[in-house]
Length: 479
Image 1: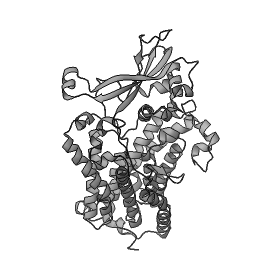
Image 2 (image 1 turned 90 degrees about the vertical axis):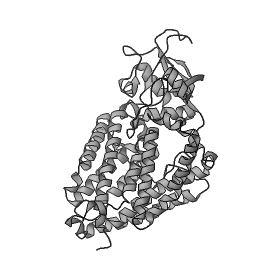
Image 3 (image 1 turned 45 degrees about the horizontal axis):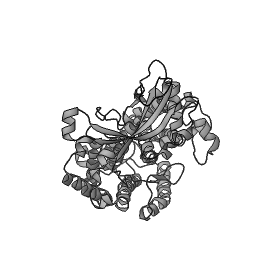
Image 4 (image 1 turned 60 degrees about the horizontal axis):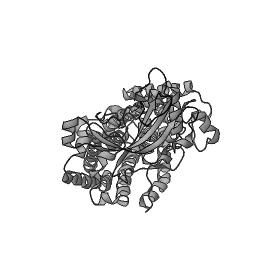
């Protein structure tokens, strides 16, 4: 069955699988360390409450059957250990069926988390990890050559990620067509990194070149993934280089890294890898060929919705069309903000909350707060609360469900919630009142940085949440 496998891609498969396992590892560790405050039994958006109202068919998950914080932690850490084992090569030392089972368990565990994660897991890279993780189940291991059909399906994923993002930019904000979006993006992106300040201050002509290069990478280069080698490898290399540029300029969780991972599956490493191992020439067993062909047919059928979305004038981004997240649509930053607002949360131990009282700020790990603190690098680790705080600053509606419970937990001194923060100004006892205020942030200039040492300049805009006591806070008060 020579048509079924491409032995020359054995090293590409190895690189892809190791990298994907690494992304899974970050995802599971992040889930294990953050879930109690976010979706735990006593979290801001508890899983038990969610599954009471959402049927299994709409959100299939192991936690629909039973939930406890201990069970969730066990699943998350088990996923992390399994991902680490696959990253170390465990999938290549077991029989083919066992390797497929290992990847299937990873996919099932993470699907179970995403489908009960609610707002905290509503990001496009969750669906992207699940889609790619599902295809990885059928990519085989060192005991059989890489199946051609799955390799093409991975290119189809890479194409949709890049081309969908390119289309939504051209249809969205006019600044993409004018090549001016990057005058603002590095400053207003959800979570700037340590180099974002420097990227922001590049000359405007460089920003225009960045924009133009982005359009070429997302609208022209993805088509070349389907051309013969070595052109497909060059196209994948351009995508990888672009994604590494984005890694340097911001914090986008594992979005860039999984895009790199998928692109690498299109690279022909034959010149570097030498001849494939003898096992790669073994004929694939029929029990393996049949499900690979079936999955290929399924993906082609399910691709109808993403294709219709891409050609639609009302294109949406980051949407799943099925509850298993098998084939999704992607795209980001169709609109770029021109200003940056930040919600600053403060507490006081004063019995009367005076405007000029002793208010102390809660500092977050990743999102901007203290103007003198340089942005840090966290990606591919995903700081979910920090990301949602960026959305909360855009509109209180984005925080309607969780901001009130977040304030409640600060007032109660909840240990799990405080662990999500960088600095708790009330280590001995919780505050009496908590308030939130909205500030306008901008990067400082070169001169301001030299004179003040501050990376940000901010000014107060208005009150976001009035001083609130534990007995009076509710979700509606956060609007």
